[in-house]
Length: 113
Length: 151
Image (tube, rainbow over all chains, first blue to last red; front, side, top):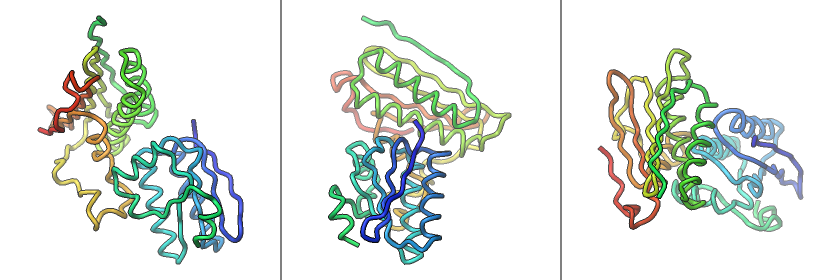
């Protein structure tokens, strides 16, 4: 299953709904291009909704980190929404939970920026 | 009791091979009664080791292959991935958990492999390359609580 993305905006926050697997190759490239495109358009508040993303490999994790750092370097903020257990386990193992602000409630996430 | 089964393949240095390896390991583990979580973890360990072999070992070379083996029985599954690259020392891989590396965009594959199998060996292959051997036990009684070891 490849990665699909759809973009919507709520109260000035761009929410990227991600569905599928984020693995090395086309999927990680798609995530990278999506975030960079949003940043290029001047968006500073980006929320990645991982609710329908049940699998991420180390490259996908790396892409999440790169998205975070690329955004931070441009004065923008990438946060996570609806991280599923399998993915959360990976964030724990890699200690990336210390990097990302993560939310289970969309309204709360939007209000946090 | 199910007999031990072996599978030995020579795969191309493309990401399709990582997909195939993940699927093969998961199907065999399922066939031998491993739990859903174990199957998930085995698939990820197989994928990560294959990606390391394809990307870092063989550098996507069409002339180089990845030897992929699975030996599975009721008590344990052993997955071996061998590339034809220049080799590397696992001790020289930067610690992805350290503060200075936490924001790196890569370097977490070995960490995940170690987390998801019970035993890992990484050693130089002859005449070239690196061989990664991963073992996962079906239950603690079968040895599933043994310490992670590397040689």
